[in-house]
Image (cartoon, rainbow, N blue to C red; front, side, top):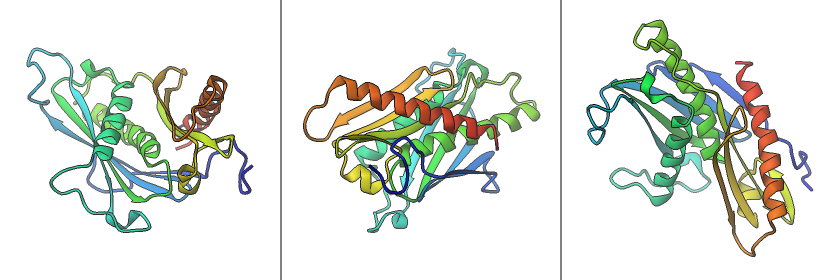
Length: 233
């Protein structure tokens, strides 16, 4: 049992909109001691690999841990990004594309940047939540400027981590809990409860399917609470 919060309790969550000056959308997202600056930038055109006749625009994501974001300085990934970074970037991109009708952003590319300035577990899930809000802010301005004719956002999405630590299912793991987890999971859902991503990994011994369902349910409840916080911004 946790000492500071209940097993199904989120860390303190805070979203600060318009955190930077130049990005079309920007949000500082804080999950406890994890802090991530997420921004949304928009460019004309779309990736060269997309067919010119394809009616869709595109959304992509980039993620980075800043050197002093962890207890020991991490190197900047200047020329080659690590497999972990590639995995997280793809996760953020997949998650946010799932909430968009890409045909409503024709000939545009939206880039979500997630820069972790302080890491204490759950950086990828925090990046998805902040990225969604930065995307919303960018879309709002594009509609106001007449660049977009229709709102392309289908419904909100949010993400959270969960896991099994010392035999107990815990929500929103910090670094200490994550480093001792027997099972680690990252869950991304829509507001209506549809699954975008449900990644679970046993770090040691296999675990029972009942625990997997418990992980999903505790995460779903947490995600509902996060999405409720979106409406308060």
